Amino acid sequence: MKNSKLKLNANKTEFIIIGTVTQRAKLDGFFPTHILNQSVTPAPSVSNLGVNFDESFNFKQHISKTCRSCFYHIRDLRRIRRFLSLSVAKTITTALVSSILDYCNSLLYNTANKDIARLQRVQNCLAKVVTRSPRFSSSVPLLKSLHWLPVHYRIIFKICTISYQALASKQPTYLNSMLTPASNSRELSSTSSNPLYIPRVKTKAGCCTNSVEFASCQCQVGR
Image (cartoon, rainbow, N blue to C red; front, side):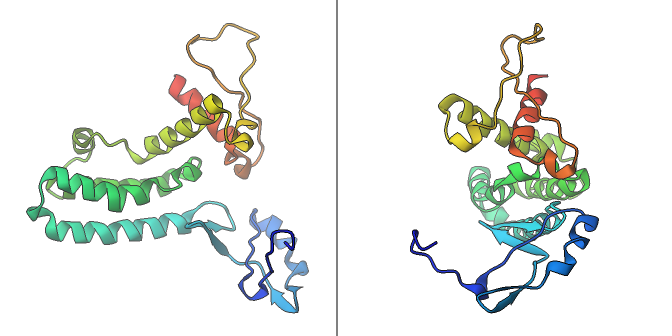
C-alpha cells in the first residue's frame, strides 16, 4: 500500500466470508480480529461498485435492491406516461430502469430461477407502463413489440458479448486467459461455432466463475 501511496483506514475496513453455513461456522473462532487496534468482524454483506455481495453468494440482497430502485422509477414514469410519446417513454425507460436491470447482470447467471423471476416481474411491469397496457395483459407480446429480451436472456447476451470481445481482442488478459477452446478430438456438430471448454466444478460457487459462465453461455447460444 505504501508503494501506491495508500493508507489503511481501519474504521472503514469491511470484509466478507463467502461459503456455506458449515464452512463459515468453522471460522467463528477466528473473529473478531484486530487491524490497527480496531476490532473487525465479517460483514453479512458488502457493496462493491454498486453490487451487494452476501455470505451465501446468492445475490438476494442485490436483487431486492435492484427491484426497489426499478419500481421507484416505474412509479414516477406511470404518473407522466400519458404526456409522453412511445419513443420518448422508451428512451426514458432505457436510461432510468433498463440500465439498472442490466448493470452487472452477468453476475446473476447461476442465480436461482425464483430470484430471476423477481427481476422479470419488474421488466413485465415496465413493459405494461411503456405500452399503456392493462395490468393483467400478457407480457410476452409486449416484450416482443418493444424488442426487449427477457431478463434471463439479457444475462446470457451480456456474458456472450463479454466473452466474444475477450476472445477477439484478447483483452483484458485476465478474462482472455480464462477462455479455453474445446478440443477438436471429434467432429463438432456446428463447424461455424467455436465452443469453449467448460471446467468441471463441484460447488455452487464454482459454477459462478467466469470460465464456467462464459463457456456455458456459448454452448447455449450454439444450440
